[in-house]
Image (cartoon, rainbow, N blue to C red; front, side, top):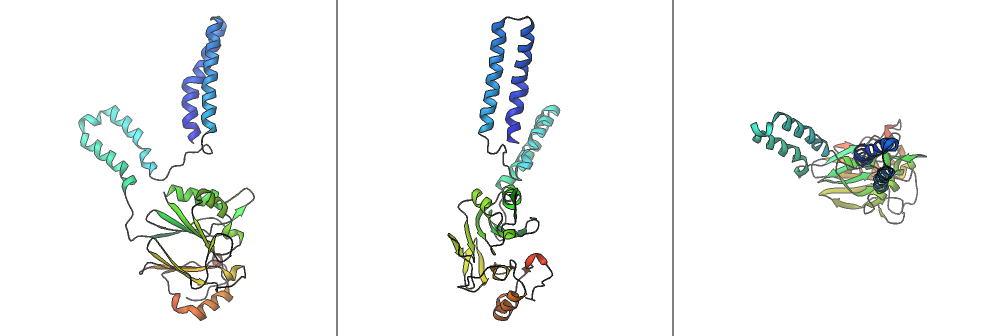
Length: 286
C-alpha cells in the first residue's frame, strides 16, 4: 500500500520518537521544550494525514514489471555487504541490465493473445496486441461491486495494457456488469454493441472493422433487429489471416441454427468461445 510507504517512515522515525521524548521531558524538563516536542509531533502527524488524503484510494498501482525491480534493494544490500561491486563489476552491471529489461522489451509484432478472465458466472475476455487491449463483455455485477473493479481493471493494469475498446455481446448483467467501472478507468474507450444505446457503435451482421492489424467481422444479429436477449448476442469473428477466434456471447440453439444455416462459410475458426458459459444448450457445429 502506498499509505504504508508514507506512514511507516514518518510515524516510526519521527512521530513516535518525538512523542516518547516529550513524555520523558514532561517528568523533569522545562515546559517550553516539552511544548516544542508536542508541536513537532503534531506537525509530523498533520503532514502524514495531508499526504494520505491525496493518495489515489491509498493504493499505488504497479504492473508486473515492477516485480523484478522489487528485487533491486536486496541485491544492493548483498552487493554492499559482500563488496560484490568491487570484485565483479561486470556481473553487477549485467544484473542491473536484466532487471530493467522488462521495461524495454516489446512483444513480437505478429503476436496477439486472447485471455478469458475468471469472473464467476459471467463473461469477460481480453484481446491484446502491441500493448493495447479490447474487451469482449465485462462480467457480472453484485450489490457490493462488480467484476470491472475486482478483476478486469487490476488485470489490465498488472499486465500493463491500455484498453481501447469494448464489445458488449448483449444487455444481461452477467455480461455488462463491469462496464461503468471500466469506462471510468478508461473513458476514451469506444463501445460496440447490438443494443442501440447512445454512444455505442453498432455490432450487427455485415459490420467489419480493423484494430491493431486484426480483422473483425460481425456475424449476428441481423441489421435493424431491436430484439434483446441471449439469441441476439453480438457474434464476432477475429482473424489475422492465419489464426482466428469466434466470439459467440450467449446465443442459444435457435440463433446457432440460424447462423449456421445462413453463414456457415464464415464460421470456420481456430478457436470458439462456447456460447452461454458452456451450458447444456449445446452449440451447433461450426
